[in-house]
Amino acid sequence: MNIKSGIHRAVLLAVCCSFALPVLAADSVTGKVRNQTTNKPVAGDEVVLLRLENGMEEESRTRTDTQGAFVLALTNAGARHLVRVLHQKVNYDQSLTGSGPLEITVFDAVPRIQDLQGRLGIAQVESDGQMLKITEMYAIANESVPPVTQASPRNFEISIPAKATLDSVVVKKGGGVWVNITPNPISGQQGRYTIDFPIRPGETLFKFIYHLSGTDRATLHIQPPYPIRSFAVMHPPSMTFKSSNPQAFTSPGVARGLKVEQAVSKPVVRTIPDFEVSGTGLAPPLTQDAKSSTVENPSAAAGSHAPAAAPSAQPSAQGESANGTWIILTGVGALVVACMYAVFKKRRKTVSNS
Image 1 (cartoon, rainbow, N blue to C red):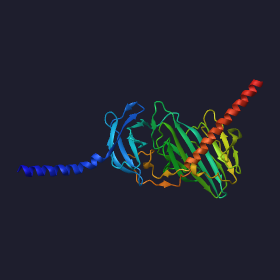
Image 2: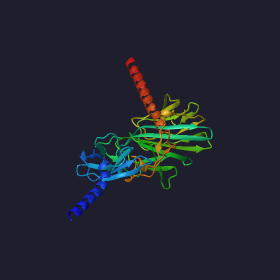
Image 3: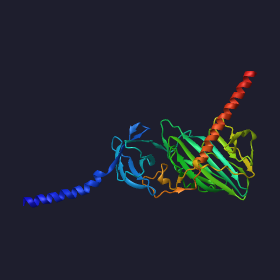
Image 4: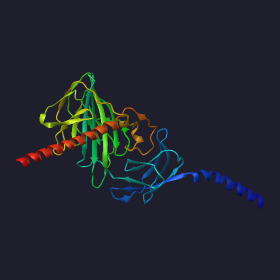
């Protein structure tokens, strides 16, 4: 009887071990979540481990404890992963690199941040004679104190001519990836759309493209979604630019083959005077180094509110040149600063001579 009992116990132990081995062999991801708005650990936030193969696949899920700590089961250590924290319906993503514990920062969400502004804005215009293409780009700076995230269905608004066709919208948070966004039309207002993308502390980049068919001439009325500290219209030198208010723009020079028409701002641009563009000319092609793929589904990137893993996200050519065009935007900012310094220096010299 004792022999049989011993055999049964041995078999049972072997079976238990066979089930336990995969769990014991599996690695884990550990970390802590801290709310930088309150400077306290976050309890109860959902944390998801996403495997970046064939799109995004959920590998494990948990919640933070009272100290903001979490442990996620990692079953495929050789794959690329992303850890997503959902805090107040906003996603905060961090790539999994190294073996040390993660420190993930989140922020309280508010429907509106007072005095939100854009650091830079651009309207790039080009035409092949049959179609006028306009690319608007904005760098929105969230400098809230204490830091909070603006989370609202109307975080960013797009205004284009009523007869224009909106081609694409891509968005990127600082340090993130470009995300293809589907804008929401505003009922009863043709040419107006809203974008539901959280504006976290730091900088968020927005880029949208639209066109007018059958023309190489148009009068444009650009409506920035927020006051912009520095705004410029860029166009090929072969095209003509004419503002309804000649005193509203200066022409500081050429950046990356495009002529710059800088809007005068004191200290920010709230409205852009109408201007006419005509003629033909295309923007210089971007180098391969300046190109970047975008993610198809906003749920697959840090910009989404979605708590769960997204469907397969494939690279898209629609926003391929988003990084490259933003290099142009940065170049314009540097050019504008240089020109402002030159004007200041000239004025100072004039005053001293008088």
